Length: 364
Ligand SMILES: *Cc1c(COP(=O)(O)O)cnc(C)c1O
Image (cartoon, rainbow, N blue to C red; front, side, top):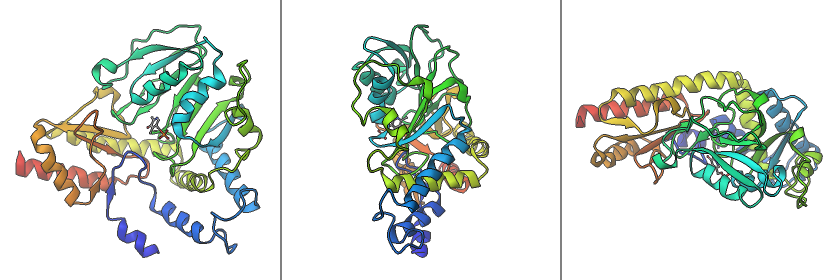
């Protein structure tokens, strides 16, 4: 089995999500499916209430506290339904009918969050880059001080923009960190709630991490269905019902790996260096150009096109022939998108950069 994974590791996977994970996580997760913890049974067939799985859940929670530097004021839960479920679960838990919340409209995911918030409150768009196909992060914001929270998307996976500053507002930030969680440090004290689908930067599809400050909850007067009330999952240690055991286990392994790599600050330094290699080539190479405002460039999803779009197919073919997978840009942006999450090695980025240089030599 080890060999099987090694053989398939020749691909350079730049997919936006589900996406690359550390090779050792794939190996350990595979072993756990065959036999978990030497107990003669698969991780997938043991009770979620058994001690071996309770240990996984406890370690997963503890690693979130440790990696993010959370105090006891914050509660951590692993839920299901993806980040898309948080688009409505957040306003259901935090907003009364008609109550205002600010939303920064920085992409399709943010727009979907706004759409859902309308069902349970009054989302006000504090800034939008919709007119520019979301190729920048709006900086002139309309801040209504009455709003209960301000929702932002820390990294816009489709467009390749990222918040490199945090809105200076009195109300707590609520943040969709699906595509850059654990990729960098952030000022925790500004954040009242953070959510992230696991499948971009922290694991396998099937679980969503939610981190919420205790004082955010208990404010709404609507009746919340039991499964939708965050307090149900907090009070039951993410085990009110059967949790998605395998995705949680994989997230735990990824967090262990991040810790071993030196933690979130170490990841941030590595991610900055990795992104610079690719952006430097995009800026140097006359055949390519970036698609976003330079100051808002994402260190997770690098979007670029060719000056001559008719050459894009030839470059895509060259990339594919060299084991590069997943760099086709989202249909709403076109061109290319190289997703370079935590687990993406610098060597794979170098392969892509070398191909861009080769292409310049032969097609420039
Ligand atoms: C992928 C993504 C989503 C959607 O996540 P699901 O888990 O598929 O619901 C939401 N927000 C951002 C920023 C994303 O990248």
